[in-house]
Length: 329
Ligand SMILES: [Ca+2]
Ligand SMILES: [Ca+2]
Ligand SMILES: [Ca+2]
Image (cartoon, rainbow, N blue to C red):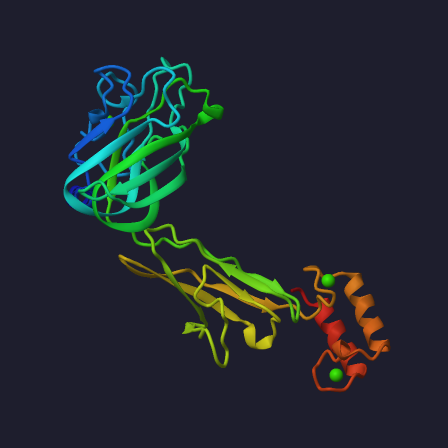
């Protein structure tokens, strides 16, 4: 009995979350298209929830082909064709969700999703507010494909223009199964990769936002903001890629990036920078050539042979190098 009760609570929670996500989706009030296969495949089928479950979320799959659940263009009309989605009340838009057409095999190319398209945002007077070009689409995806862009305010219409279809535009048709929009999606940052560089080498840490733009970046060293100028500064501390030149002991740390977009701030996972002293020739590997180069530097009295940084080149540098060489970094 207790298990049943818990299950019921869990189901209720899932339903609540699903409804919340649905509530965030912005659905167009009307739509027009430049090309339509027939009266059964009109653009209205892409905005009325047909083929979707009630209270659908972006994780729901659109049903496969049926006459009145998707929009299809006329035979041979694909590239340059468009659909325009209208909002009765101007909207703030920062993401586009599209469900691709899912053929039953009638179409000669079952993947007639647009593989590249543009979005043009207009206000109520028809003035273009923003254009996002060459957005990629992926064939064979049943759930929503979500596209992010810089948030646009006061949007009354969005034109979706087909630029390319699968198989080098060989599809005779294109279309959409369903669309929805969203004002803002929080960043879901990619995980920066750990780096291990030689002394004086260059380390880079990168993060992609996976959320609505515009996105501001602030890299942190051991949790502390890296300044753009002054002591401990780095001019790339506010960029998607942090570049650390001339890596040394003071750079050894865990790096994270705080991403801030119109819906809030989200930190990335941390990535460590380690400096590997035994990679003497800075080729990202430790092998006999590092040993040979170090011994050559020793006999040449090169400053780089001052391995323990005590301004004297002597046998202790050799011992320290050998110790580092046998270590694993
Ligand atoms: Ca539909
Ligand atoms: Ca090496
Ligand atoms: Ca020394």
